[in-house]
Length: 285
Image (cartoon, rainbow, N blue to C red; front, side, top):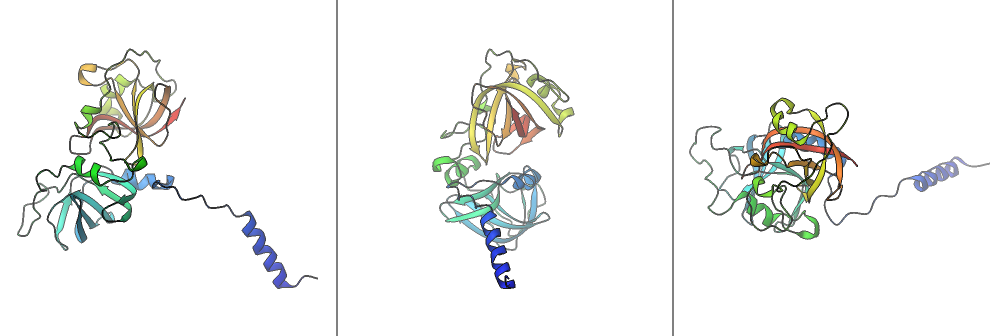
């Protein structure tokens, strides 16, 4: 006969043995799948709120903003601000599990933005000043960021890792290559050229595009940035090179079919503007 205490002990032991073993911590911060939703909700969104906390580090000002969306950490080029100020922030990009080397601190979620939105309301006494000269958004972000693989500095979206100068999104365009890829099949399928030509109509819709992966910039802002071409689109307008963000890595030179949400006229500030961008894509080889 087993005593109740013995039965409880054996049950607890069984649960311990069958419980999944926790994964070893990665050396690099990794955004969990469930974090995609808040990321897409705040990317490119103008934030406004009261400053609860602020600090400067390595050319950046970190703000804890009490906004309508909640309490959100924001990083902008170094700017004079005070606790209690009401500020509007230019739309930026979300990073998860971002570690600031100089602050020796990891932010679970932080928005990197080009600066304050001075046109959101008239200036008042004590208003924050413009960012200091030479503290550009892209340069400061590359210097401060430590989330890239190997501790490398962080280039602009779509740029090659380690690139020391920035020409915005236009500088990352891959020249037109001699490729001829058949259009994807199935509903919502478009060529690269059609994505650009119908960008406004397709904005916010899920599309399928088949093309050759010409370049990959890995783990920029927590995503892989692909450049795909299929032989369509106008090279004179850079409409031949479609940029796609994804968590997957199909490898350069492969022909793939991507499915993601099309964003038209996506502007991250500091020259990072895309007439058409495919976001959070799934990849089929």
